[in-house]
Image 1 (cartoon, one colour):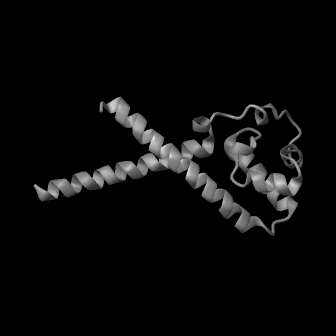
Image 2: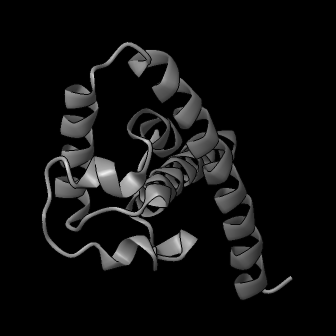
Image 3: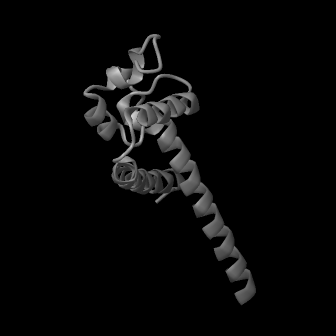
Length: 127
């Protein structure tokens, strides 16, 4: 297996893990925010928008399904604090381009680099 194939394989594993982490975070969100008011959920969604840099599509926000459930519609939730265009809601970024995915991928890459450094240190001690 060449380096490019190896990296593609590792990326596939990392992105699968990221999908599971996001699913877990969505469940955690529901448990932690089940008693939040609509105003609190709206404030959370607004902070997500500020972090992402644009009005988010549901796939870009942890807890989006719960927010939709509570507000009745994603657009209704967004409109509680934002009156501009929300075109990206219908055309969300691809999975690998979403901020949450990029952030989790960078975290995974950092952990892998730490493991590699620890493994290298351990090998040097064994020589």
